[in-house]
Structures are given as structure tokens and as C-alpha cells.
Image (cartoon, rainbow, N blue to C red; front, side, top):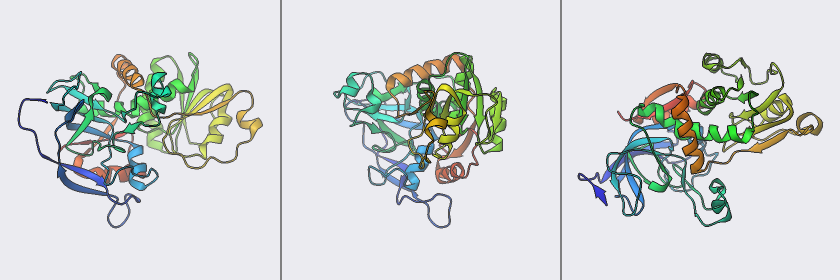
Length: 346
């Protein structure tokens, strides 16, 4: 193991104790605890957290929409930090490097999905903040093969949201198959959507945003969207493609009905409420397509981070001290966050 100084043997972290509603009366689902910290194992790096984005997936985990896969799981999968130690066989990182730890934490590497470049579909895939402890902590370990080298220039709190909100938005945009110069509809305008809109605009697309939050509509227009309306407003013209970021299945029929012939709706979330009954003629006929988005591949991550380095999307950050992660989740649940919430060390 490579290191330059004595390693910490304990760390502070949030853990999901009993999944349930955030922001209500009484104790919430998260508890703050001190726990032992192991040195990195083979092919792992130990990272001191500089910033961790707050993702809606973390909210689903805390509230029980996603069942925890490990007891007292620590959420957080948009992590920027410094490498404190490098385990045996870990390549690509040295002590002191800036590292990004994202949602995809490991795959089997042997199945047909992995061998065909679709590792996001691996049945044995593992995830940061779900299968292994995440970034709502002062330290974490990660498999170096699934971490990203990050540039030194940008602030950590602006880089952190790129590692999930940005990457999954990139994959959703690819899945939506937006034609060159086409009109992209975006339903919901939070962390991922406000980054995806900027990538689409930089590619020459036009963007229409549909969201119930007035501050988010104003942000969408400030970033260059040509239209920003309420969730069920009709578009200014038929959409060439659309992405649903809001975890609201009731918006699926509205988004499909807004599509032009041959358009695609990509659903970007890991959790979605029930979809109402669809009318074939109105919602799917004329070769409209409804498709899901499942995690991402490492190739997606590398491609997005390279594109973001070129286009430099503005990241609208609301910062919270690490000890206020429960407050950040409550604000996210109540739509009080415009842009993206990020946890930073005190």
C-alpha cells in the first residue's frame, strides 16, 4: 500500500438507520456516527472527501423507495476528494491526486453485458452509497478501476454534481436520440436536468423545460432554454425528443403526447411512481418510443467529463455543511433546492 503519512483509523459518516420520510417531526432516517476506517484493500484507493453532491437517489434510499442493500448504508455517490492511500494493484492514482467516485462502483467484468460494453446492465453491478459506503462521510474507499481522475482547477463543490447528475443526464440525452438542431423537452429541472440542458444547448439543440417550480423555470430561461412552463403545459411545438427527470410516472403520458412523430422519451430516474394507463393512438403510435435509462458505463463517465471540460456548464450549487446532510435531503424533498445541493466538510 502506498501512503505518505499515518492514515486515520476512524471516520465520521451518516448512515441510513431506519428508512422513512425526511423533514418530518421526530428523528429522521439518517444518523451521524463514528466508525472504524480500514486501509484500502487490493485495487482500492482511500479518499478524503472534499465535496459530495446530494442526489435524488440518496433521497429514495433514505425514504425507503430503494431498499438498503447493506445495514446502516452511507449514501452519496457524487464524491470529489484527495487520495490518501493506494492499495496493492490499484492503478491510475497516486497519493495526493484528485479523485472522483461515482454511482457505478463495480461489475463482474465477465458477463455478456460487460463484454459487450453494457456494463451498466451487469446483474452483479454494485453501487456507491448503496452497496458500499458512500460520500456522506469524511472518508471512503473506492475501487480505483471505477474512479475518475479529476482536474485540479474547478472547485470541488462544482465538480461533484458532474459525477452523477452530469453523467446520468449525458446517458439520458444519448438514449433520447435527439436529432441535430432538434427541440428537446425536459420534465423536471433539478441537478441533472440543469446540466443536461446546457450540454444539449452546446450541441446546438433547442430546449423546452416543464417543471412545477417557478425558481427552476427562471433558472432554465437564464441558462438558455427557449421555453419554460409548468409540468403539464403544452410545448410551443412538438418535441423531437424528451427526458423525464422528475420521478413522477403521471408525467409520462403528458411527455409522450408532446412528442412529434418518431420522437423518444427517455426516463432518467432509478425510481418512478406508477405510470397511468397509456392510450396507444395518442401516446405511442407514429413510432413514438418510451425507454428507460439504467445507471451508466465508465465510458459514459469519461465521455461526459471530457465534454464538460470543453463546454464548461455552469453548476448552480447550494452548499450545506456535511453535518447538515439531513437538512439538505429535506430541502431536496420539498423542492427547496434550485440547481444542486452539495455537502462540504465543516
